[in-house]
Amino acid sequence: DWLTTLQNENPPDSPGYGFAQMGTAFMDNFRATGDTRAACAQAMGAAASNPGVLSALNSYGYANRTYGAADLCPF
Image (tube, rainbow, N blue to C red; front, side, top):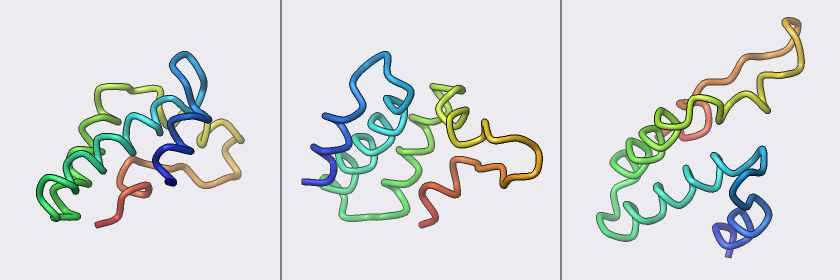
């Protein structure tokens, strides 16, 4: 249900589309393997193929935390 919500709320060309891609990559792999580490590796691969994915999270200035892909999938 949460993946569907993520996908529906973040269509292509929206600022959050990269997060939907990461979630889809994670769930596709997790459903196939049951391995959270492997699923996170897939999610990180999706983030790497979309270098702007973290720009929305990291656009609040230097005084705020900077996020990396590993922060979104810590397994």
